Each structure stands twice: as structure tokens, then as C-alpha cells.
Image (cartoon, rainbow, N blue to C red; front, side, top):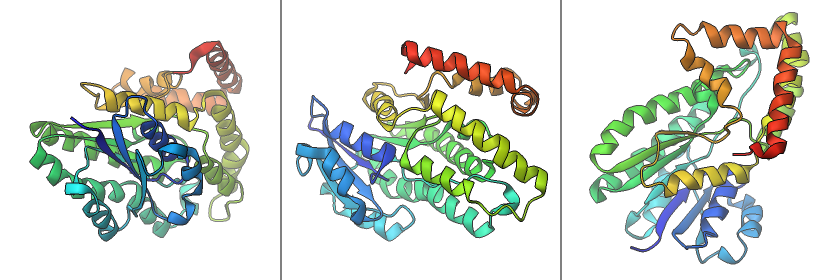
Length: 308
């Protein structure tokens, strides 16, 4: 068997770029990477990072996950339309009080995060079924497991992604197609930096003063602390994603950051849902010292080699 062809979306920066380069530079040369992005004008950083692997084990193509025609054109350009591994990584972010978000912006986010995935899978799934092989890898989030304060719409889009994949995975198994949801926690990328930079300048006039205060004075500072304490690099997430791609029996779900796992474990510990709600409420609004102490312990674990 020759190298597996891996199509990765959203490769202009962040996790997509790191993963495409990691696969292309695989020591065993197990992959031919099709690294895609919506705007080829942003290919510079990827070309630089790819180095000698460019035009050898990595090629760059245009693909807009919000356009069925763009997806089809990209897949049609591949020999025999063969995609052995699809990595759906392209995504958009949104944080802030619900009252301050337009319905149009919410639809745009879902068009990328959910319908972008649906379009991609709809295009490659029939060929995978015919070949009776394939692996669909989806960059989800811990917020697809557990909703977080002021991430209502983004979390909803990731919940949709999780439900879509969990449902599809049963059918896919019949055709020997694997499905994996990769669930990072905080990741320090330009994407995340821009989301929070926009949030700091956000017009909060549509919400009440108390909600605006909570967002500015509590949520944003807390988020910065979480990112500095628990944040992974794109390269760390790429390494974790490589593990699921190479696994003989890849999992349906894989959280990349074991330091964040205690947070998501709360959801499964209490079927009523009260435990995670009460815990997060108290950590944020009642016991600031507990929150800071918890992050301090996690920072210490990370320094001692706690990186996954």
C-alpha cells in the first residue's frame, strides 16, 4: 500500500497548518497531504513551514467549506477523487452576550462550523463507501461536550458537530469507515487571539450593565488565565491528532488536553446536570480563590511534564 491521501481544511494558520506540516514531514512517509484553504493569498506561512516537503508530500489547494462547488472542484482534482483521511478543521469563533450577537452572524458561524463539515462529508462519503475504507477526522472542541459561559452559539455549533458525527459513525462502520472527533481545550493560536481581541472591543450596548460587567471584568480575565495555564500549542494538538490517524482502532472521541479532562468529567458524573452547573457557577461567581488555586495546581502539573 502506498501513502494515504489526507485532505485537511483550514490550513492557512493554527491547528490546520501544524497538522498538515506534521503529516507531510512524517518520517515514514505514510501520507500525501492536500492542505486546503479558502484564500490562497494566505498560503505563505504554510509554504514556509512545509519547507522541502512542499510539492513532494504536501500540495496546497483552494477549498471553501462554505461552497459545495469549491469542495467538489478540489476533490475532483485529486487522482480518482481519492481521500483516505478527511480532516475537517476549518472553523469560526464567537463569544459574547447573546443579546449582542446578530442572527446573521450566528448563521454565518453555523455555515462554517456545521454545514461546512456536512458539505465536506457529503462529497467524500460516497467514494469512501465504494472503496469500503476511509477515516473522517473532525476538529471539534471540549465545548462540543460542555457548554461554557458566553460561548452559547459557538458551543451550539460544536454540539451539532458532535451529534452529526456520532449519528453518522454508526452507518459509516458498516462500510469500514472510521470517525473521530478531536476535542481540544484552549489552544493558543492567532485564531483565538483574534476572537478575544474582537471581544474586548465588542459593542455591549444591547445587553444590561450587569451582564456587560460580568463579560468584561470576570469572563475575559478568567479566559486569559485559563489559556495561560492550560493552553496547548497547535503543534501539540497536531501530535495528538496524528495519534488518532495512525491508530488501528481510532476512538470516536479524543480529548487532546488531559489537564482539562476534570472539567469535562463533571458532566458525566451527574445525570441531572446540576453538578457541572453548580461547580462552574461557584468557581466563577462565588469562589474566585478556588478557581485561581485550581489553575495554579494545573500550571504546576504542566511545568512538571504534564503536557499530553
